[in-house]
Image 1 (cartoon, rainbow, N blue to C red):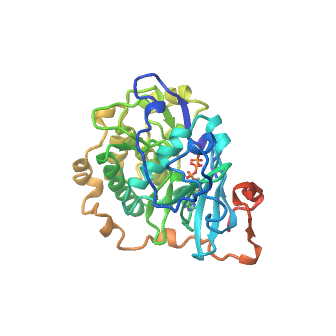
Image 2 (spheres, rainbow, N blue to C red):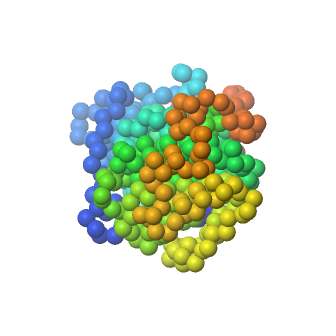
Image 3 (spheres, helix red, strand yellow):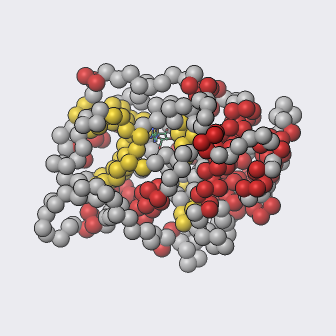
Length: 369
Ligand SMILES: Nc1ncnc2c1ncn2[C@@H]1O[C@H](COP(=O)(O)OP(=O)(O)OP(=O)(O)O)[C@@H](O)[C@H]1O
């Protein structure tokens, strides 16, 4: 679970013609069976969230048992649930509608679903169903029992270079894929990278992602402070290069055991910290990794590494493939040696008749083992 400052921030929307308010343009139709709930016009609190979140009545909603609370999340919890019909475990992100509207994040929530649904890549967490009840929005996806990269990092603190190289290649592969589609993620951080059954990475949480065609620039100050590029912290203009800075911060932390710049209170002080920072790269790191980190943590966006061919020919990746299928060939021992949370006493689980209303009680549940 992240502390307050680890939650992503949306500091402000600068009026540039491409503010967060006019970003929404994708209209996605899901294949979910939409319940014929009423002949009357839908209430505003329902239609607002369509079509990304189809309305499910209790009659067609999957029967879910709550097994625990995985994370608190900035808007609502992520629960671990059992789909009784399929006897399969899922992660369920629950977003209270009131909170979504209060924080003015309606378009972000819709964009999260529409973007994530169009993505298909071995290192991206794919989306299951999304739907709405009267009070909540629900986003379901496969449960990753090894948790996220942040938990792994917290338990080992420093990751040896071979594994850093593998993770780096997986993330380069996924960021190149996203950027080629004209999508900027804007919240690349350890907490948003899940670990799959074989210990490989799954980028998740597209809550701040944006369609940003090449040549266009963004201005919204958003992300997670410690990972935000200087041009994002200063209010733009910025582009896809900002994700490469975040990758630099992440790889530095994995390899060195601490962040390159300590975290500030707000984006203004964070920008000062970053501008003053003279990244010290320990001599224990190989020359290749040291070059890679310096070239990713380059304060001038256009001089930062960002082309795929720059990674392909980089000394740190010598002899390394970027083909996802080859990268996935071997399991990642470091991850598989971690404790898994799969043994569940189902007699201890809770079933809610009206899941939409009752789920909040589950916040008292312990984090799953
Ligand atoms: N499919 C999953 N399997 C296992 N754990 C998950 C899964 N999805 C999310 N989590 C856990 O829940 C945490 C929060 O998830 P996510 O980032 O999607 O929610 P959020 O509400 O956007 O949180 P935040 O606002 O803090 O970023 C993740 O860091 C991860 O530890």
